[in-house]
Image 1 (cartoon, helix red, strand yellow):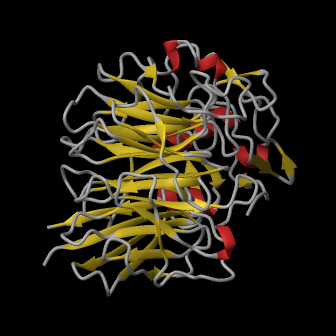
Image 2 (cartoon, rainbow over the protein chains, first blue to last red):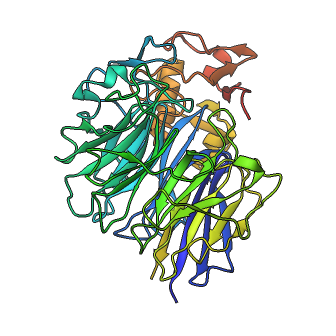
Image 3 (cartoon, chains in turn blue, green):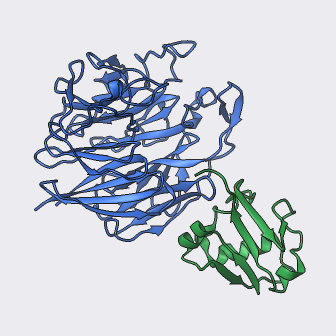
Length: 371
Length: 98
């Protein structure tokens, strides 16, 4: 029987949660790298036993860990992330120029076809690539070099490149998102990039329609329609039907259009999931109820999914990389909270139950569908 | 033989014991001891000092013989008691955070 492997990054280690196709009984393995912040763990689509993990802390910096046996054992690989050339400056919180400084890897995106190729989105925002299984890393410097870099500025969590989407229909097309610079696209495998933020409106900016500066929290796509993108922005849920060339709002009847993650059903490209958060100053769910919202219409019309989720006295957040879907016939949906719960729905969100309740604060959730 | 005590997280990372012993040619300094440590345990590159500049990471300190050597010049000789193996060089993660 097929199964799933859920990869969880937390403030104090990584956990691997496994189940069969029913997704009712779970085995919990971890913590791996106990005491370290694990911003992200992700498996290779080309080899499900190949996993990459971003391990860091404020004392001893960044490590990249690799597993070749599905997370049973791990080995550190390359941890040297050096910006190409003279790094230059971006804006600091107070608007003054600040030198680019590497802090950590937020997101690891393995190639769709080669387990040894993996991309890393880092803070301060840049995109790195490894072609030797994480041993060595080289910046795709055209992203920072396209001209707007000196105007980028950090969000509250740092100036991070947190989203990397590889287009399955075009190996030269990559989408990335940066807080708080916006979304960018390359059509030449990373040599050159352009901002794709037309239609985003951010009243917090001097020019709400600015080409860059938007705090994009997450972008999602369905692999069958890679030119259709869905975005959870700082405020506003957005959609693009032209690979990011233009965006329009699809927040519709959401109780709040602030939030972090957004994802797409594995088999229904017009079915979306978001988790509204009350506001940017109150990073917890509205009305003390943990509700996933699902749209089956590509946005605008949203329904709350509450079965099995706490509907009183709940004050957790769900971070941008902490939601994922599996590809089983009945699509599974997963998310982790800052309270340490990881919830699973084996029926596309209709019902939920916690896989585990008391992990450290969850930073990321990914899922692998196993044969 | 130079004795070096490394912090718990780096012991785990390097799969090393709390105290490691290193051969260092000539009069040992912070630079030569860290160079030798990173040769013996390459995974520690970048964890104690920057890969490129070799500047000490902000939350890492170097103690020996009840002295804080963190701000010593990288090539300054270490105390005789460290050089002759009577005392270890302590690499310490600062008490900060949670």
